[in-house]
Length: 126
Length: 108
Image (cartoon, rainbow over all chains, first blue to last red; front, side, top):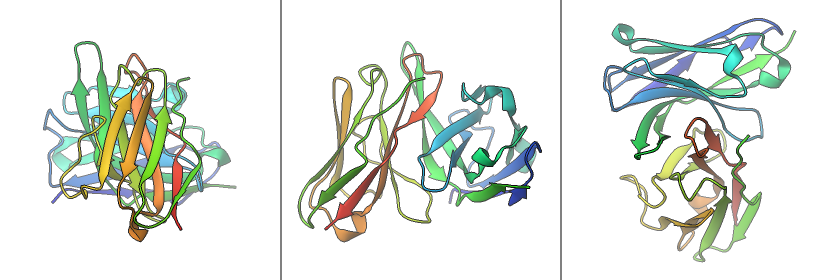
């Protein structure tokens, strides 16, 4: 049974750095076919992809947030960690981690998410 | 930045067919994926690679693609299908993963 669970602070202050951990079970972070992504959703708004990481340490970040994000993994602990610097109230959102699969054509790859964690609401406020 | 455009809302009566569209310039080159999200819950993948259905997803959910538009079709809509639906794909280079703005499906 595949499960993902997010953990981290529920409240952060503006300018602080957010660190979130995703703990997975039912699959291995060493599986080359699967990765883990972080996706967020502000209250009442749409989903926004943030970053992903795969077993070979391939990483990719949202172009608009790249300068503030770092994703890493600890395969032995089955954990993926996302850090986001310089938090602002507009970053208030539910943050999800999701198992990520990819389909690659001859020219590019698309990524999609077949299992999701329950999400964790992070509020940015002083 | 690349965008996927969905109608904000679609309404349908039970037993009817709901069609939710998603438009984007790169869709002829990139596969699209669809997610269902009910209030307070995480999204669920309902269609992948334009028209494939994951195991456990009812057959009434189907997907199609034509040019710069992909469509999620729900045949014989049931009350339990009321939810937000998001399309997802990538820009033409595959660099960015992009979600549409979401469509709220209301079952009248």
